[in-house]
Image (tube, rainbow, N blue to C red):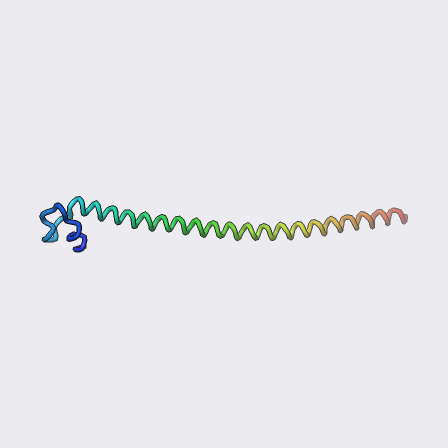
Length: 95
């Protein structure tokens, strides 16, 4: 804290004795602290959004794999139904 007092005291007469910060020094410190806090919050928001986007991509890939499996199963069911219909027609013609 002493560093800020000695570096930022431009107008105050009490700064040499560790007194109050001047308005200019307080403004500089406020700007610096605000910028640091803003940068941390911005980084945190970006990081969370990136993790969310990665999870969404992973889920979308899993959905695509499931859709491909479902299409394959549907094709097999259609082939089975066609074979079943042919067998049923053959049985009916035998009677």
